Image (cartoon, rainbow, N blue to C red; front, side, top):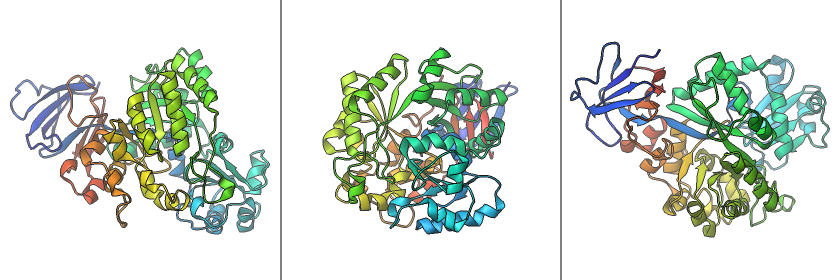
Length: 489
């Protein structure tokens, strides 16, 4: 059993008053001004001197694909490739050291002058089975040998959207689930070192079963909400699991839901459904993955099972259609990404009770793509300030492996609207630090009695930090349900 933890001399963000905090029984058991509560420390407690450290509720990444992130950490990174030929060359260099399928990650074709093609991979590495997953996860590029190995035929080797997502599970480099689970555990420990205590896992798999298996193998280092996709909806129902249910055997750390639906594609793949056409006539306006009536029916199925709909919508047309569906069903939920929103639709999020689940690193990584493919509407791309002003609740995430699951990178991007080198991009849509922090900490900055003891200790006060410090905030300790998952003190 974990000993109670007492944090001595900490302070809340923006507040100089020293506090003592007791974490016991998996919850925040006491918070008092430092030295004023004689009963706060008891025999057997793990007392942590932390004078001057800032204490926050644990940070949550509201959108990840955790198995793919664990895999991507071991794949060939082609994110810097400026052409398909350069990506193919990087993969060819990796091929001699690999056995079996050679998998890369992170290609960004939206800025390339020509599209990926299977023949480019074949010329670079004849006969080698090569697969590359796009940075946005909406496309997979395969060599002829990889197509044959996976039992597929395709004229170009570039698979997109649902066809690509269904294929990605076959690209796993883990020899068995136990090996993948070890990779997931490593990724989770690294995330805890950046202050993460929870994730919402949108992996395209039976995430409920996967996380139950991981919890059975040993203590988890993250609190997890397991998204359910349509192929696993019936299996979830057959297990008697409804949205919000605790998964048995996980010590309360894994809960079921939300229900994931893809309304459209992505900006980088030029499949995000927009009111305006893309510059290349071949891309048209992007595309909806579901007709509006089918979308409503699928959302209704989820609601009947107690699952909150979490609907992927990137283009402005897709966001409008999804908001229509929420209003017509009279239910609340989440829109994942909300990257381009028409001004008339911004107030509809709050009116319908729809949470905007956004990934600020995307605005840093995609600004050039947006300037090329959404040239006349970038002023309303990633409209965080407008959404907040309209009363919308934001939650921040990374979409890992699209971006690394570092909450401080997301917070800094939302505040600065840029990376480290370039001027801010549409700074009128920037968030203040407090708003960005709350969107990463469950809507609050102060610990509350009786709430789960998911806590992070920082070596800098984020409310008083400049942007450079905010990006690299030192995390001194992370506590999940009262036990340390990362500790430098």
